[in-house]
Image (cartoon, rainbow, N blue to C red; front, side, top):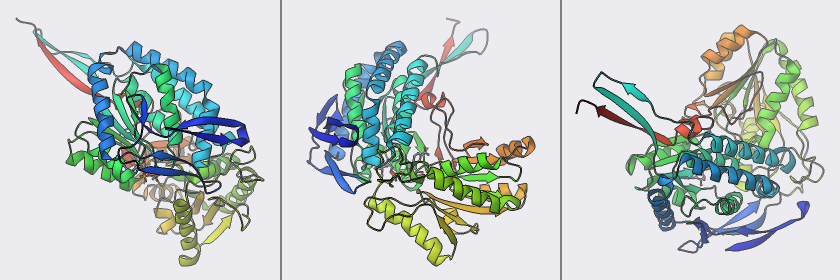
Length: 500
Ligand code: NAD
């Protein structure tokens, strides 16, 4: 159930679990099916792991239900807090290895991205270790002289969670830590391309002392294991992060099975709006980071950049010059090297999809395109040059669809009214950014933008204590901060008649 993996760049050799994690044990899938995980920076196979089918998901749900009924629902918040604090220590101990697994599996640069993911995972674990028993408390409500009511915030029971590949362990941690602190048990499915880190992490849960069945990990194909989880009648709530199309399917499965509540964190096409009075270097740095970090594979990527006409040319020049200096593949195009700040995209299919958008922009729509850094024709892996299109009409496919790669669209606007219209002209509503020194413009933008997050003079700058989630087709519900625990609690009201 383990395979040796060698990461020569860091001098690491370790034993990687490759089974499904059910009841604190790694097991084979019942039908023996496996998935290969590919290193996107080379296109070569790293390892194979077992893929759960519906019968395996059923076993995992049984384990989670048993653990909830017999053990976890009887723990106190302080016991859950202690376990999470122990987990913090273990993540800190193994953070370099966990970061290395993220780089190996997803291609994200080790120094500039993956280690940062681990710092966030540690922070989120600390936050919910401290939050157990402090967030989501009930109320006492006076009704009359003879009656009062009490509300309790109680866990759902078994929670199913499905996560994507762009921040594999971070997205899992946004979901799991608050859910555990709230007192639920979990069956979680990582993405097909990036299951290694969560399987390794499962061992830390055992070492920390989490009882069997409290967390179960079922790697597998979305259409099979993901569907089975979202449809399972004994899963009491499902939380999903991924594309809007799959989010709709998850909601359908939830509705058709047991009407389980759903949290959805879905896609985006987020605008960044730069007014003529903005500090231009600041705007350029944040906007470039907001589209090129993680090779643009961010749900909140500011993929639509609108710049006021009077500073458009100046902005484009500064953007290109800054991106050329900052966003680089590195000499060896090895995401483990310190000089690599732009890694490959996740897979061959994403590579082809993103290239398809670039070709469409150039060939079908005849748009002007700029690329940063050339790639040698023989280069291995799924690297895509940071790219931006200029003077793009609002109805262009590039302005409408989530590309999920290092591709920005930079267009102009005349005035404040037009800026907010263009920014809101999308089916999505995950995030947004505005750059200005005028408090009036900033405040009106915050008021009028239809998005779950708005950054003023920054972009893609999440904090784990602040609620996060989307308007419109970007999702339902919130994660992180207090919301990240409240979303795993439901209200029970008790009425007391004190006349007897
Ligand atoms: P995806 O929707 O293809 O897959 C996400 C997860 O869902 C994977 O684990 C996949 O196996 C699973 N899945 C696929 N089909 C399923 C089905 N029918 N039923 C249940 N589960 C299924 O998304 P992706 O390509 O992995 O990730 C990219 C998308 O995720 C982008 O749209 C991005 O914007 C979004 N995303 C959103 C957030 C957020 O917080 N809003 C964060 C990260 C990524």
